[in-house]
Image (cartoon, rainbow, N blue to C red; front, top):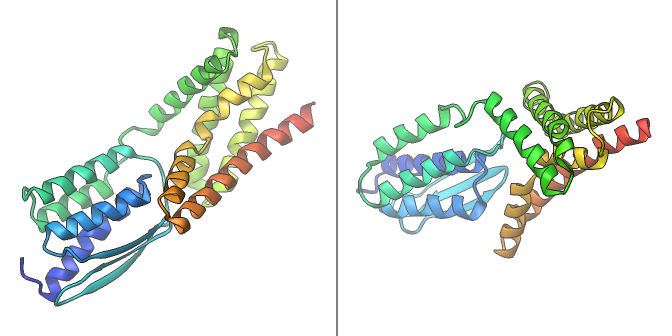
Length: 253
């Protein structure tokens, strides 16, 4: 592939779009960098450079016509199906099965596509997970349904609030507040007996497990900026959850 200015720009756009989708979908920082650099190498630019943080990507392809671009990451969620699809496209490019225009078209389809699972199904999954976490923490089958209902309703509220409130901290705080209030109400009317176990099981779908795992992984790999950023984000989420539950317990007990 010739290294004209147009080609360099197109390859940079392709790599950045792949990295953007992965980072917005919960992909690890090192995986985003690796994928972008592999795509660039497969397209004839083995000396590319990347700098990835949770809020932005800087990518450069070197050669006769070097090109550098920056992309901001404003929204992040967890959609590992999209990460898998981008990985598959990267491998097909490396095997020579996809050209640059074809890969760009597929990536734009992934970017504009809906999440792999509808929101109502995510809420149901959160409800089932809440009940199962309660059993895992030895909460007893009599508390399974209260925990499932509180967890499912709280997660559905979180999805709804994310549309209204751009600041994630407040959405998580309000969702935790409602989960605590619902759990307290269930126990007071006799629909459930162990308040602590019901609350613990119900808030588990909100816990930033993936963020914490990625933060530790990035710190251990030496990606200090990314690791500290993700750790701070996980800390804020944990603070929002803890504050919401603490207020409910302080008011009703």
